[in-house]
Amino acid sequence: MVMLREAAVNFGGKVTSAAPTMEDWGVSFSIGNVLYWTGLSYSQSEILLLKVFGVNGNRAQEIGFVGASLVPNSYSWWNRLDLESERVCFFAKTKSNQTKCIERFVRKAFKPHPCTGTG
Image 1 (cartoon, one colour):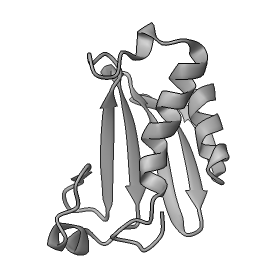
Image 2 (cartoon, rainbow, N blue to C red):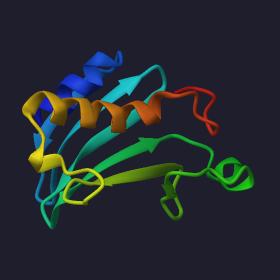
Image 3 (cartoon, rainbow, N blue to C red):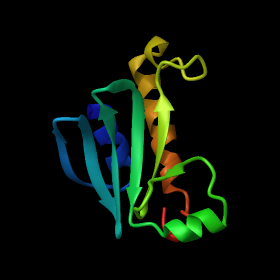
């Protein structure tokens, strides 16, 4: 969670909460008018999630937004990174390389977003 918080702050995020719930543990933060959440679900602790709220779901579908899945009946999208995958090899990395891996994953959400015009 420390690495997630650092990644959010490194990209100019204002952390709004960083606490566990009954289902997950993550960091909520905002940049401009966009709210983000990144963290782990207890039921799939090997999957790092990043959710972005306040996007135009119809616009995302129109342009064929790649790299994330729209949350049904919601104006948000999410992306996931499997930390145990052979491609990522997260747990075999040094701490500094784990932090870089998380920052690369989170950075993808900060490119100008096609549904909000922000990133």
